[in-house]
Image (cartoon, rainbow, N blue to C red; front, side):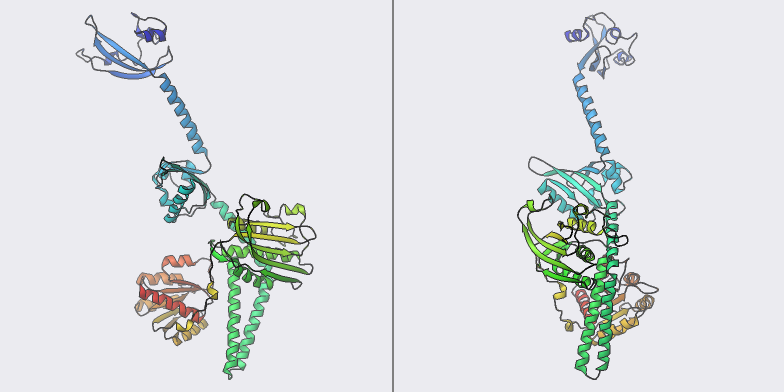
Length: 600
């Protein structure tokens, strides 16, 4: 027994029994190594290593036991005990810390993950597993993030952004569940970098807002339907005016049938009336439809001019409109949502003046924000903005109500006159488009709403302003026309035959498919309607692609809630066209599709 042992146990135990002195036990220890140190020939077996906490000193030891020959020739047990108490305490603290960290990690309500830059997961919590629909946490860890990306290229953009900014907040990744279901998520992430500045690890927090997005969509749709109801009278008025013009010019053309020049003038006006009706239908569908929103460069000037045509036909005769529309700057936004902002603000303005004569002033100009003090709010950045201004001469809004005008379902209108969704939806749309809104009003002095969107440096010439040389679009190919409307078939047949094409017509999908099966190489292109009895246009297209994968198809639709341009593209349809379409435009489209096929 060396001096250290004597110090720890406070006595010299030479000649005493080990289990009595060192273990305070009444008999041999259950884990005693004595019977392991010698073999059956009484020869040493080697070193036996074990560890444990001594019940007397309360300290931890690693023990190395072996049998050696003592000076008197007897075999004795030599035990070397190394004190590891401090190491054990450190391990215990580490385990406690790891336990607390794991408890925190698993308890976070967001989907938390740690990964390398390639998307290979190192760790994730249960909420991450639940968000993506994995059966177990291990399955989630074994699945790289790339497998959950709807568009892998967006992940590259995310990594570049993280490398530049080090931390990202409020990012909306385009990810899906393991079963392919689209998700709406918000991600806050931070990067871990080595001494050379290379990204080596990503730590992310994902918040699932899919249900919230659905509710927002429902809220916006409900508000749009409310606005459509408000405008219904004006829409009917506008349509009746257009129809009056169509009937009138048709009768005049008939009267002057023997005077070609006059008849031609009346027919030209007839076409213009038809174009006005088509434009009105497009505006109503664009405004009312429930669809995925897509941001791209657009002109607020053009959208505002279009919206005012609809508003002008809807407002009472006692209200005048003054236009101060100057800016043609571009912004990044979704056109349907911008159209909705304009319609909502103008509808609110003229409704506020419905009981008396009033003036609705609509302005569009540009402003540069140098200092934020005039436009308080952390989300507002310095720079150039386009400003939409809607001013009414109504009774105004008192101070108490001004504090609540952007609250959902808050309204000062009479029961049945509105849901109180309008301004809440406008506020939400504007913020999502990186803009902001300001309201100014005082009881008895009317109201003014200003909407600001950041300007982008881009100039775009809208397609509507580009004149097409439609007379150049001719050909000799054979075209299959499929539509259940006889008038449409007849007019398109005549028009396309005049351009040199050979036409075969079918009034339903089944007869068209039968003819195609009999002679699939006879046709160079198919133009089909979407909604037809017996077989829809998309079903016909799928059946045709089973026979000829390279068959060029143009799908035309008057309106469809279940089919979209994106779906058409996925099944292989070349062009998806909204009716009405003129013969000239269809001829241009046919030539474009056929020429592209020749090049390919």
